Image (cartoon, rainbow, N blue to C red; front, side, top):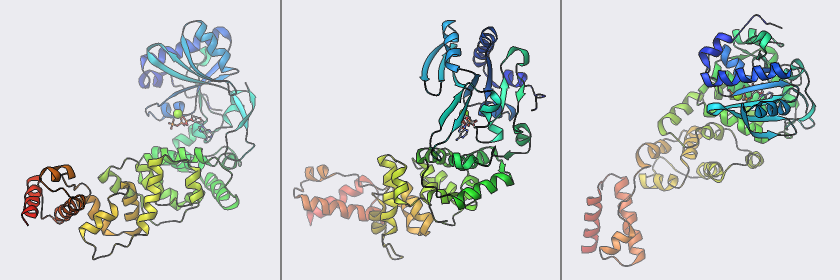
Length: 406
Ligand code: ATP
Ligand code: MG
């Protein structure tokens, strides 16, 4: 255990006055009521790395709910949410500072990759950190008055931070929770870290020997979403190179992350992470298991429709437009990545935003009454716009008037 590192100065420079005040209140209360409390996990990691801290997690050696009631009785905070079985609490301090409190706990996983069933609440901090994913996320910082700011490192996390290494804590880590395989990609990409040999071996062992159909797809989906939303090519390259994609039963499409990032940056789709994932994910039962929203699901259906379309070198702009117009932009991008058909780029670059400005109503007002005729003229206008023969709304009106004369 390494206690030589003290983060008091980093707290001052990296956290707001309001957060520091809230932590001091927690610290004083812990001292008075004889609790031991610690900053834990990502917040300690990010403080040491001088990165922006996302959320403040405090672990209480013992029962966090009881501790938070003491804080609330003293009017230091308001309890917002309680999860009774895990004894976790979300609390709000002055000036909207939110802190998540957890009780130290040991966990047991009855079903691989599903939420753990808790064995014991109120274990020691040392026992608690072994349920965590990587050594760099198993660091704690004391909030106790006798050693405030000291880093408590039971697993070698500080050294791994220095060496930019992601290392799981034990042989059973990926069995317990395979979503850690994706978490490794996320941290590797975000922090520019690498997995050590031991962790790679553990991952390979998991991917080759386990039948991973009994896992929590919600967790996997959430981690994939966070990872690919970073829009960092390396996460995708690692996803393919390390066979991680096999977790979702895909084929290796031999695409580079940079190609995807270039497209995503250029066309800003609503769901960038699904452009990455959509190049690999094709297993119907997993697509179902991911419980996508309707809009997300459409991307996968549209991709299938596009892969069955028969565009060819001689397709006209109108044919290209008709092929893609009802399809999600993400699906058009995935189709391009998988097939390299230039027509998809022609659509995205030149045709996608072309619209006929006149409406059926306008045409009626201009004297064309028959529905079928209106449809045919609007279609004709579209064709001319797509081939650049009609550009403005005035051009459209001129064309309609010519048709009426005819
Ligand atoms: P982020 O910066 O993305 O919030 P984080 O490391 O804080 O990263 P969280 O998901 O907020 O991650 O979780 C907080 C802590 O809980 C982690 O630092 C880690 O110790 C632990 N943890 C989270 N997910 C897992 C998991 N799947 N397996 C084991 N421990 C986990
Ligand atoms: Mg966090």
